[in-house]
Image (cartoon, rainbow, N blue to C red; front, top):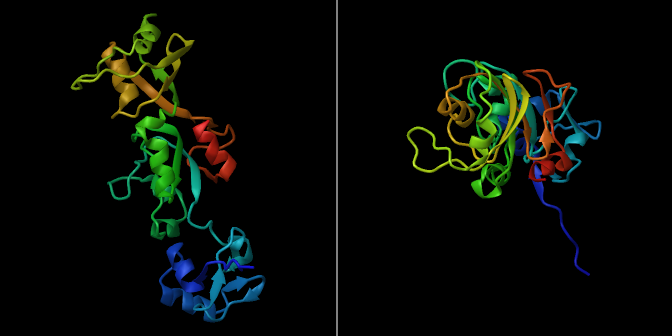
Length: 246
């Protein structure tokens, strides 16, 4: 009978890849008694541990629970005024997260982008395969936005957006059909399956209106939690992440 052997990793390599510092930093933390595993101080950061799903639950760093292993998915309620970038000027979405997460390897990245003046549901992950599955045009994952307009609706917007004939300025391919639900004469919910540059704003500009406020509320089957304030984030489990594809 064959015996399945679990993959292992060095503690210093693991913690360094999660942004806690260099391997030398991790070694110093261990010697200082700052790292525990199963409530026992880890003095040798070069020792190896099996990679299992419960590994973060077994560690503490300076008395705090270990961050999620690679494969982490974060839902952030992006506020207005921050940019989905690692190095643009001005406030960045990554500054809303623990600073060490910027040093994670693989890197933590936004799943698509929301422009600086758009708020709402934004996913971040260090799982490159998952990121590309979500943003792939072939998936046609619906994105629902709450749109507040500068001028009252004319009444024909829903028909125009659903036609599949609307052409944005400077483009040669019409937009895929989009669904519009009227909330009030200046507020709508818009569901799209594409992710073109500033798409929602340009759609309304194309029919003579202007978007004053734009918030993404849903991605696939995943909704922005009502109790998640702007700038706050929550870690998603596998079931919640999978709901994006429903």
